[in-house]
Amino acid sequence: MKQGWYDLVYVHFEYPVDVVQQLLPKGLEVDTYDDKAWVGLIPFSMRGIGIPRLPAIPYLGSFPEVNVRTYVTRNGVPGVWFFSLDINRMAPTFVARTTYKLPYCFGAVSHMREGDDVYTTVRRRWPRLQNGNSPRTAMHVRIGDHIDTPTDFDVFVSARWGLYSHAGRKSLRYAPVEHPPWPLQRASVVSLDDSLITAAGLPAPRSEPHVMFSSGVPVLVGLPHKV
Image (cartoon, rainbow, N blue to C red; front, side, top):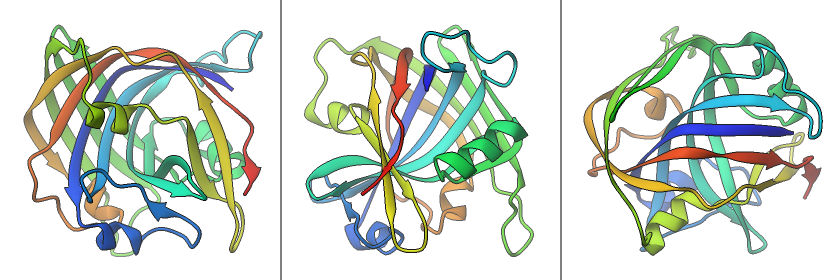
């Protein structure tokens, strides 16, 4: 599928490897940087979903998304593992869950850029937690200077060329991802009140976040296949 990921915010927290590893399915290992696992809270605007060489899907093809993810490898092949992906469209939620087997969630989601400020909110409606709580986030990020030469860590959290997902009881799927290099900028968190990360089964983050912004790129996501 073709799509565009725009006004993207990277907020990453470090975690002990074993804390993240215990949440992963068999066959995936945490991909580490500085011997630490990294969990990202990533809001952006999804635009123009469709099939290559055909027009984008009207209305349903553009929406805000906020995902909670980490980085993994399988047999030396790196990729992204999603704990959750919150959007405000029910139809794409169903399609992504049934085709790509990704844990999309439906609710009230907004993501807006106003000059150098980006505002994101989530109030999940489905699926709710077993205790009936509705995970939420409210984030305000301020965009800073352009990054002319990304660090190794900047590349580690942004240059990801595939994603893993469930494919049944004990099997996994992998889908390749193609996109141009991200144009990156420094950013800082003005305010953040989040329960999406803890809803994924992780403890609340204790580290200072590493924050970046990207105006975005067009993306191609290939067909998933079992691995």
